[in-house]
Amino acid sequence: MKKIRSRTGTALFAVIMLICLYYMNDGYFDTIIAKTRAFYVSTVIAVVTCFVMDVIASAKGLKREEHGRNPVLRAMLAFFMSYLISALICGNTESAFTGDVGWNVGIIAYFCGLLMYLVMKDLGTDTDLAAVVLSTGSIPFFLLAAMHGAGVDLFSLHADLLKDEQFNYISTAGNIDVYAGIVSLFVPVIAAFYLKTGKTWLLTSIFAAGMGLSFAGVDSGYIGIFGGLAVLFIMGCNRRSPLVYMNRVVMTLSGSFVAAEFIQQVNGGIFPPAKYISFFMNKYYLALILLCITVVIELALVLHDRDFALSPWIMLLLVMAVIALAILFFVHGVDKSERFGNSRLLIWQKAVQVYSDGGVREKLFGIGPSMFGAYSRGVEIGGRNVANCHSEILEHLVCGGVVTLACYIAIAAAVVWKVYRARRVSPFFFGLAGYFFQAQINNPQNMLLPFVCIFLAFI
Image (spheres, rainbow, N blue to C red):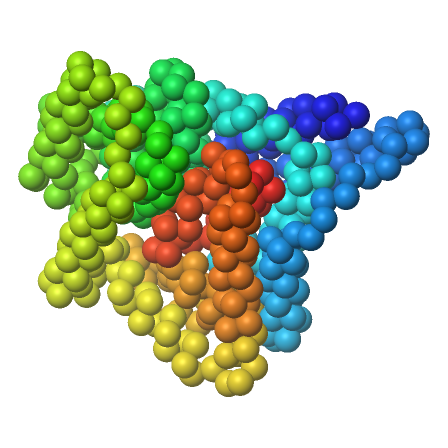
């Protein structure tokens, strides 16, 4: 029965992934509504599946498997209860439940995420098989993004958009920030599975994802992917994983960036290089330089020592050097313009102000889930009022208060503690790491939330 439940969990994950990734409604115009609907439908399917499996087990006289203490679940329950209290006392309970002031990430969404976690945890899915499902099922999604960025609108999803909106939406994710969240979640998982198995076909998905990200040009996506990979490579070096596999992942990504940049150079009618990271990569040929370096490393390793493993301390120093350069880049950008990062500095200042202006109740439990848009008048991007804090830490602090933020941090801490104590690390941990890095300059969204909760169940 345990094997049947595991296979059922894998099949359920495949269904949920297909629904959440590919369901659309009237093209891009109802993306948030469409992905919220996909999330709710997926949750219903998950709960019904779990109920059916429990009925079958009960009919066979089998007892439910005990999972023991679960600090991650406790932290998630505390997080949900804190937000529930926030919703009940915020003064606009209906909007706090639906999240309609923001991107529909209200109490209902967080409750569905909790249910998704409980179902997938109960079914006990085989994470290696789930990684195969994720790697194969996401290839069409990433290929669509790469084609859209290159000017091939396969299903005419851009046809009815205004010209100045066409570069804000990509693939069936819709919003480019949501796409950045997906690549941050998925690419580190695929890379971790590649390091474990050495299966070359996995690099196909990474290449397509990288091209799509380069066209979309969202900084949070770069931060998420390389943050997740940094954690993977440091832990991989500590476990003496061959450097050649890590190098091939970076070589594949840098090659995908170069391919996208080449298309942008020769075709002016496609997604132009975005500001900041994509712009500087194009201007200084950073992706091409990185590609050349990784090709040289590849040749050296193949010709001399394919099993060479780098010291984790050297890898840590390399990561710290890259982080230092990124910080310098950020500080330079902030000094240069208050509109740096698509006005994120202004948004963060407004978020801090909203929190500071609140009373004791707001400081403890916030203004209500996804309610920042009701307090952000005067802060606009592209003529539209900003509905999110563009940083999950700030979002949970402002909307859920210090109690909810503490629970959010407790979830991350519980995950790290669980991985620290485990002998075998799930590939999905690295996806969560990538997501956490990108989330600090991005928004919660109902296409991302189900995957985050499922990944939490897979570690």
